[in-house]
Image (cartoon, rainbow, N blue to C red; front, side, top):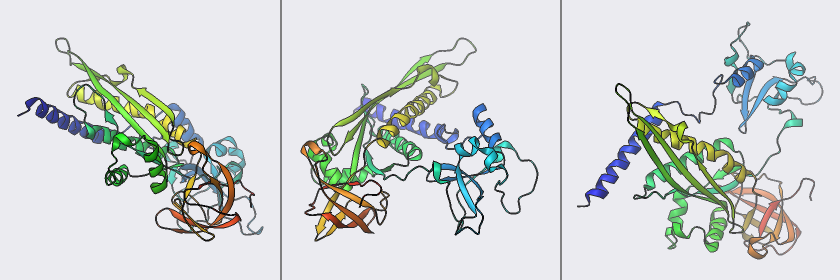
Amino acid sequence: MDFKGLTHRLYSLFFLFILFFVSACASPSWSPIKWGSTPQEKARAKALGNAEVVFIDKEEYVKVYNSVPSGEGSQSKYIYVPVKEYLANKEKYASQPYRKDGAKKGPSSPASSSLSTPAAGDSIAVASPKLPSAVLKKKVVVAYFDDRTTFQGDETLGDWIAERLIKEVDRRSSQVVFVDYQMVREFLAQRGIYQTDLEKQDVLRLLNEVFGIQALVIGHLAGPYTFLTPGNKGQEETASAVLRIEAKVIDTLTGKSIKNLEVSNPILAAKMKGSFSEEKAKVKAIDLTISNLIGPLSRELDGMDWFCRIAKVDGEQVYLNAGKLTGIKVGDILEVFRPGTAGERGELIGKIRISTFFGIDASVGNLIQGKGPEVDDILRLAKQGST
């Protein structure tokens, strides 16, 4: 019997149990809303007062009465103003604050600003000058993070970290939709393709053609390594931990790595005392390192250019591997490009207009300009005003 391997597996299971237990019992640092936790947030909440704050496409808006007279056309009763614009021009909206029907008059706590979504049937009009333009979501797949520590790797830990990262990036970015890696892995395994082959050009092209994936994120872990300091008489021992994550973002169109990210946590920031100090230090190191990775990774994915491919051509009807889930709308006009060398954009050969959706995330368009679109041609959203 391999007692060494058995001991390592038991230790890994114990560590994961403590990891999940501590995470469940603590208030997570990635909680989306923390009113009043810092002086800046307290000041922000005080400035908002009793204004109602709502979320629209993951952005915060303040609900106020529409100052345009109701007789001037079909106008919404309320408008939604971005929080930054509301705070910058508070006097402009101060005479028309929104109050819920039946709300009691009187002062309210700065931290009691309402956070909600627009009510059903409520006509939504967003103040247009500051409204961010609509974007199409890029499909991304994150493979589980491989463990490169000196002892036997723990795939479960790498998989768990990848899931944490996906949730955080998805919460922060409105330009990314994640594809289930388990589904992708099973699809590739049926064709004799395994994780070690993910970076190959033909595999990346297959991911894009079949799933519409634009970016592959792969990563490696080193750690978490712990450092114990025994306490003096009457004092508790302390533990610190450090984790290093290397992540690579690969463009499936070109097959090139567009960014290599390396992050770790400050060792002193993961210093813990008392019972289970070692396990708590590991949890803290993981939390800090993931927090350091979220921002750079989100910016890289948001900065990528969107594209999709033609999956089928039937006369003047063109079937695309992207649709409603991606953010395409009926009536959108897309430009068709013949792929160039090394996955580059290539020659513009025509334009199509989206006519309908089908499946989970696919669409159909009609050719309105040019001729001869072919399967695997690349499509990009045409500029506004393009016909």
